Length: 127
Figure 1: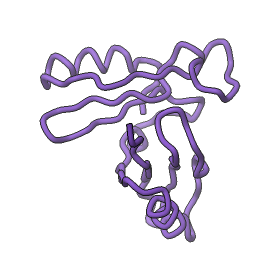
Figure 2 (figure 1 turned 180 degrees about the horizontal axis):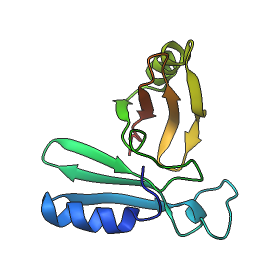
Figure 3 (figure 1 turned 45 degrees about the horizontal axis):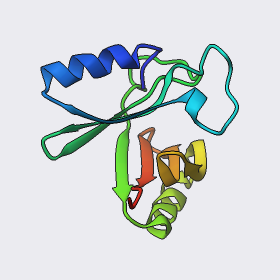
Figure 4 (figure 1 turned 135 degrees about the horizontal axis):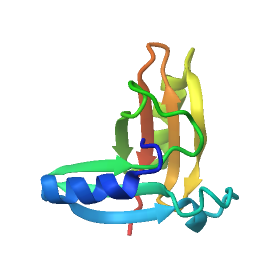
């Protein structure tokens, strides 16, 4: 999670880590309403580095500070498995983004568990 400079970070990591940009979706391209100031910012970007996937986004208004820029991402191929993981992690935790369909996933959520660890749970699109 970055504070408006995700495109710059993507270019840096593309060169520094020999990453391949798989996708970039702006807030304006998503179906949810957003402010004019946010529409050109990155809502979701995915880079491939060898066998690892890195996801990036600009903050949609959540203050970015040391400690909350990085989240653990759990990726599944099954919406039901994603729901199961989300339900388990949200117990005594905080839901930052509810489980819902997005332009990049049939089921995506962001939750901070009871230990203060933030997780993004995403179901991969089956193209």
